[in-house]
Amino acid sequence: MAADATVRCMAAVTTNLVAEAVQRHATSPTVAAALGRTLTGTLLLGSSLKELDRLTVQIIGDGPIGGITAEANARGEVRGYARNPEAEVPLNETGKLDVRAVVGQGMFYVTRESGYDIGLYRDPYRGSVPIVSGEIAEDFAYYLTKSEQIPSAVTLGVLLRAQEAREVFVAAAGGLMIQIMPGASEKIVEAIETSVSRAPQTTRMIREGASPADLLRAALGDIEFEILEEREVSFACPCSHERAVSLISSIDRAELESMLREDKGAVMNCHFCNESYRLNEAELENILKQASSA
Ligand code: ZN
Image (cartoon, rainbow, N blue to C red; front, side, top):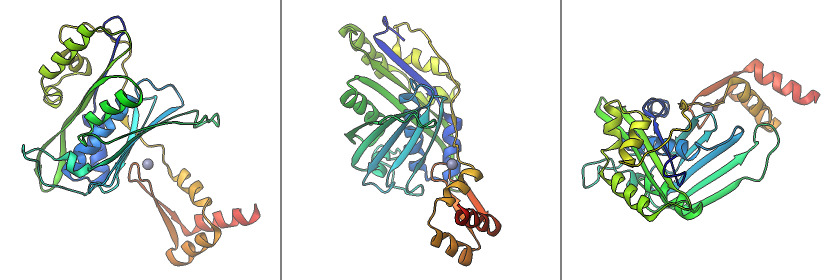
């Protein structure tokens, strides 16, 4: 918090969790950048979530990536995926990964849900704006400004190490979000605009060992801030073999029988973390038995 609580800011170093996402989904370099930025932005946007809240960001464009989904909770956990993880496009005119081209044009959606795990489910809040940039950070900023009426500056970055043997290696990832609350002075806003534009590149700072507080210090320049909360962040997915069994149990009986007959089992794949769960013949037979006795 800064400037008498008229400026709210958050920063995150997400190198490890982006590396895990990239490895789990075996993404191309440009998808690694797009997915990593989205995961980081979703965590930052979700930093004020309360226990049992959930935030989902979906970026659905007409580019080859086919869409990105990320979901964060109050515990600093995030999970996400790209529809076409192997999609790739040529570098842009400045020789950088062309995230804008892989995302394309379309819509940016945010869904906020609360109480989803305990049955106290309230109507979710949904907001959407058109994709204005496709570079992701600008899209988060545009969403906050337009849909939630919070003028914001957002920086998101993923730095990849030079590729070897087509393997994508995340050298640094992270970002920051600065939100201007009602009552902020024009002077503060101008000072932030200047200091943000002068701050060194986020991913370069992270590679050199910067902490989230260091990122904020660089972005806020002379403006003092107070750290209210610090939290670990991670890539986490609540899927499990048990959940796969309960999902399969809800499938139509005829379909279950054909899985048993033709495939001698079933394989469930979790979109969010790309984990596969194999159910064997005995497990399927058991599910069918329970269904017929119910
Ligand atoms: Zn999963």
